[in-house]
Length: 207
Image 1 (tube, rainbow, N blue to C red):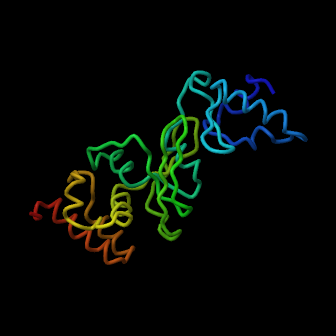
Image 2 (image 1 turned 90 degrees about the vertical axis):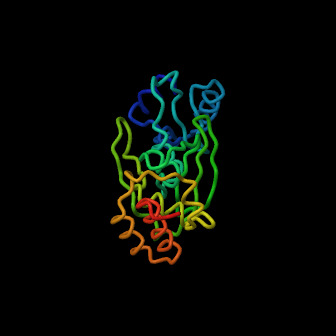
């Protein structure tokens, strides 16, 4: 396979698996060697084993990092600090992309950045929106309220006033009615306590 052929095959796939290229080949060994060469020549970016993106120098565009995060770990969505910053709820923006997943907790570092995955039970994989982006599948991002409670749930003492204060939450980005609805659905004491403290902070009642 020539590189121009690969560009045609993947033009609508900002992130693609090697299986897409091997389809129909009886012996993919030669293509495996070629893929390794393209990675070495920085024509392809290896995102994890078997997952690639064409280098922006050759594709003319950088893959959407949230789509990349969703694709690296399929049972996941972007959440916690990353989603909160994206929604404008907290001022601090991290260089890494944090997601929650029903898979194992892990950190994946590749040429596009650092992708952090934090484990939650499968029954907690809800509370996200799927947003369509150009030339890609929809990206999955937690709603502001679910991203905040995911963070509370995963952080030790995440329900405490001291922890919540340091987040510097915006009073415009969170709906308290939605937050209370999610907390009720969740049903955990830690989440209920956090919701009360968040309400106090946003309503200016906390010292």
